[in-house]
Image (cartoon, rainbow, N blue to C red; front, side):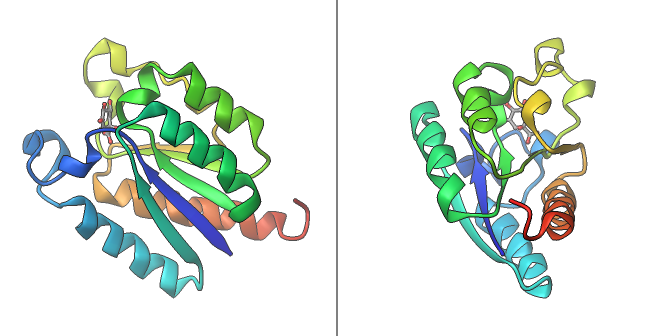
Length: 149
Ligand code: DQA
């Protein structure tokens, strides 16, 4: 089983960025934790981070033929991007949306996600655990769908 993890804009700054909200772990530390869970579940994970909407759209499109599922933190594009939403709606593989912070407990513009209606599941508010829970959820969806694609 192969899963692509996509990190959206500004997540390359984790560890220095708004630490009181996002914590002190860097993106590569979070990726290592994801990798550990993936290994324990015998799943292969690749990582991709971009600050550019179009690059993320292209990556989502390409993933349809290369991966069994996507774990994505669309970051700010969550609340703005019809293009990311449409890319997810256009592919066959399941996509799980995650956020480090509780997006419902912050500014009101963060309460709306363009992605959630087309995601297989959504996890937010648990810091790095959001990614790990999201990964486990995605693996569980894929295991129950095995051979059905
Ligand atoms: C975020 C929440 C978004 O609202 C914000 O724009 C981010 C990070 C999170 O992981 O909590 O960049 O996706």
